[in-house]
Structure formats: structure tokens, C-alpha cells
Image (cartoon, rainbow, N blue to C red; front, side, top):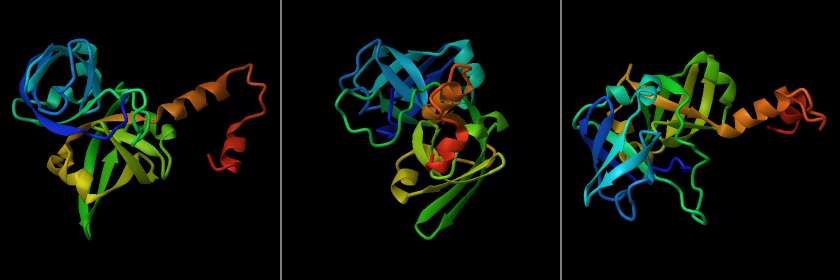
Length: 208
């Protein structure tokens, strides 16, 4: 499990159809083979670790459903180690299991902040709400607004400058993970033996 708070940006050293080598400094500290690291929001298992690099395997399924196949040698990537028990949960619950890919629509600087719009698959919009959380390339971000398939996100300067958002291009694919709590709520409400009296109307009435 992750928090969506990026610890550092690393760079792809090499990437093939089944393996990635990442240059990094912070996330290698205390990490051993078998540990998990989120790479642009994708949970990968470390297979080899060095002072300033780590290797991880990439399955064909991971390449199919994520934007990792767009990476190349030198690409800037967001990195986060799995959360430790007892640590502060600064973002939201992030599994590292990507739901799909979105596409950057525009990036506008407004004052010192940045307004970023991302088009996401229509089947994911039901899990996204205004002022809720969404994970973009591993970053826990707050939804400023959603209009059909377009999610607008207000990004503070610190996040923009210390993640690979600063390199995001219009039309570029990004990894999207929606809030897992929304999926559990949907599953709970869809079960035929839901006798609690809790419904979608009940949740909306009480601010959920």
C-alpha cells in the first residue's frame, strides 16, 4: 500500500518488455529484494537493489494496462516506497494497481498554481467526485472538478516542481488509479443481501 506522496523522482536507466532499471537515491534506502516500489503509480517488486539503482520485473499485463510502455531511457518517473505501519498517511490509500490510462488535455499556470486537466476512461468517472482523491502517475491529487470524462486538478507549486508533472505534455498518457473506497462502496451497494438500509441516496444525503 502507498500514500500517493512522491518521495523522489528517478530516471529510467534501461527498460525492456520484462524489466526496468531505475536510477534513484532515496527509495533505495532500507529497500531489499521483494519489497514494493510504486513507479509512476505502478506497484513493482524489487528484484535487485544497489546504492543508486533498483531493478524490477514488468509483466505483459502491467505493460498492457499502464503507461509504462511509453517510458524510455532517461524518462523522469515518480517513486514511492510502500507505506510503513505507523507512518503518517499524508495522501490517501493507494494500491499501486492501475485502473487505466488517462491523457493530458491542458496545463495552465494560474498565479503560482497549476490547473491540469486529464481525460480519463469513461468507465472510471463513476469513482471520481469533486474534492475527492485520484492518483495520477502515483501522485495523490485532489479533484477540483469533473466534467464528463475530464478531471481538473489544482496543483500546488511544490508538487508540480518535485514530480514529473513538470514534464507532462498535452496528449501524454498517464497512469490512473481511482479511490479504492469508492469501489468498495459500489460493491457493497450492489450486493443483493444489503440489509443495512444504506443506499446511494443515503450516502449523498449525508455528504458522501
